[in-house]
Image (cartoon, rainbow, N blue to C red):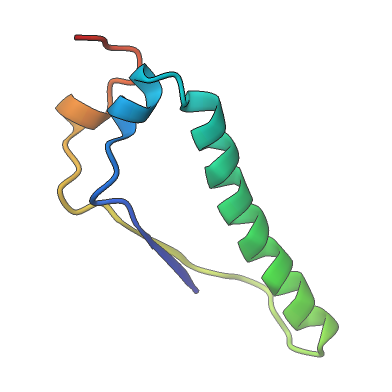
Length: 72
């Protein structure tokens, strides 16, 4: 099980500031790390067939953070 809290992230600011590509790479790396740790557990003899990812979106506001192409 993995959890990630994005309540203090300003996703719109990252995107408008030109960091969208780097942010997507960062998120992809998080998922890749989770997948790799599952594979390592399987190599160590554990039976891993599924996983869970919990995302804390407290304070997330779609009007502010959800419009990645909006500019003020």
